[in-house]
Length: 117
Image 1 (cartoon, rainbow, N blue to C red):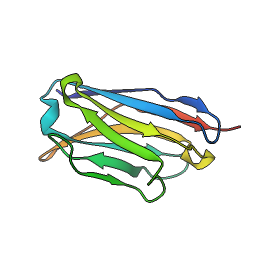
Image 2 (image 1 turned 90 degrees about the vertical axis):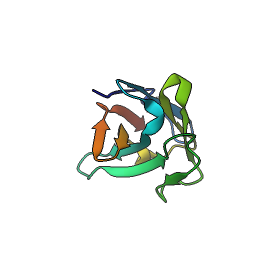
Image 3 (image 1 turned 180 degrees about the vertical axis):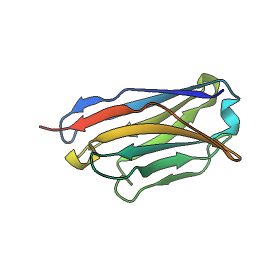
Image 4 (image 1 turned 180 degrees about the horizontal axis):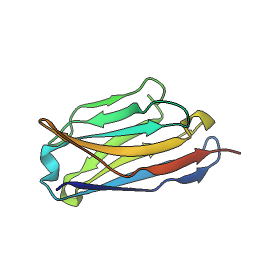
């Protein structure tokens, strides 16, 4: 069974940076397309960024994070990252890692990111 464990969340001030990590185990990491989603209090979960399987040549981003966030993957380490720069208070949310292959989808437990002065 695939397991995803996020880390790297915490408290940041506006304009600061954080890097989230998601460690994947229980499967062949490189065959999974990976993504980051977030859910703010009282709101629906939304897509933040995705990266294709294999070498991850294609990435997509929500308009709200384009130019500020970067998703990447390290296949030998079975880890996907989300580099978050120029953080804003509206980025405050629980961030979830997602792995998909065919009809299978897996989620991590989430990591809290709070952006506040």
